[in-house]
Image (cartoon, rainbow, N blue to C red; front, side, top):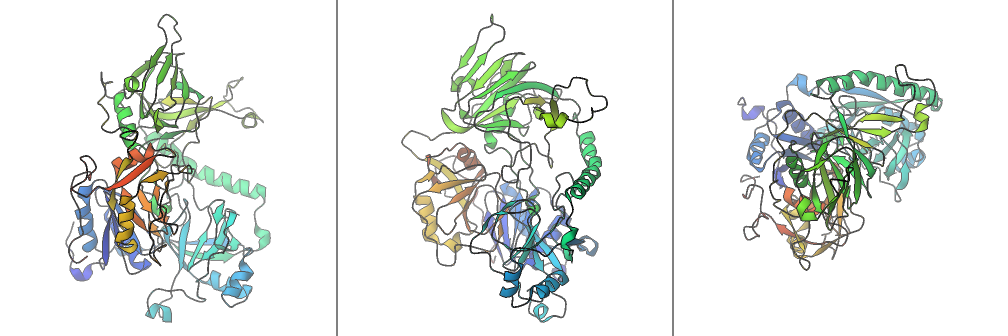
Length: 623
């Protein structure tokens, strides 16, 4: 990297915290400084940077390995600004109909008429600061004009004081396109969801399209002006359908380019039919990291170790797409010769052979776990129910690349498709890759829908794969608790907000035996136990970036551990972050499981509960 004089560098963060095994959380004086640092880092594209997520006063950098942290720390301390041509923000105009349910109430709160509020809101330039709870949702800040009193004193609102309180009672459903105000922010809801923002209008702007690049309309740093429209300008159903068709047509070249550029994309082979998916069966792979800034979490397999071991057992790359199923039993039928392996929760496997002379096979959990299992066409395999653990992981040789799904009758109504068979089998092949991953994100809804009976899993080429090992390597860590009367040990790295919550809260976190609640899922594992002591004023923080394994402490004092489908930002302090190995263990905890957090950086911890590289990390002196 070229050297720059100190005078030509951006101000360094005034504080840097470790955030998990591979992350740094840097604090800046204001949002403008965060955005400048984020743009500078983005321009440099440092090696091994997995994700870069800005928020109100903080910037999260996630590396690929703990050994990346010193380099990332040094980069922030000596960060040259982005070149002017790189830093120039994009600008866009967003149409808005000012007919929100809370328009008059907000105007009253700001001490003005509704007409004055409309003029002030549409006359303000807003800056996209950071992403939020859903893909495409962006927190917009009012821009301060140069020379204004606010600009002389630092960042702040222009025109009316845009400090608008959230509703006392959040709405159960806010419609997609609703434009709202809360605190000093403006935002547009990209999809229907609960929400407590004050609604002043609505917009039909296409905020997020997974087949567009970039997928989010409003990326960090974009300058936004709202253009008032008449209420009668709301598009009819026909106009909306035409607009949607135009957007989809515009996305076709990108989709075709993705398919043409993906080796072996045209070579797919149907191998397994889902006869019964069990309570919930999803497709997951290594995830889609790198898009946290637009509200897209990394997602991916919850138990990464199980995914990698199952894939290795059939000769796949470790991150190939697998089937992740809750508890089971899962029942499948082979449509072609194939090889699969089971990992994750311990569960028996039963294989019903189509050839009666061969005979059926019943394998106990230990005999079938992470061993290659060969199936012939017509064979049936039943996995589960789980005897220990929660999530079953099934890998298929070739990796799951697409699926064939039965179509509803309505999809075949109308004119026949040119070139189609005269008697269609009412099925369609689904390209399951979204934003570079085949993972289902249960929070955002990205990725393939949950599997259902009748789906057929298709795999890619086997050419070039590793040979199927005779004996798969033994798992280093099992899914369940070490013994029937002992709590499961979950290693964590304390921080980044342990100082805010205090030593008493940290001691209580590590000293309590927690119980997994029934309402836990891939978004978060919720815990029951004595509430942690939350100091007054520490129950919430300005929105900060989140990451898998973050242990959030809400005002209730009951911790929530974020899973792979977590929101990318959050407003509660994070007292610790579960390690990658700890997340694999947590993925296998069902309701009622007892667990204890152990400090992975504590040299007195049990063997195997330490850091990924066994080293303690601390920021340089003076930070």
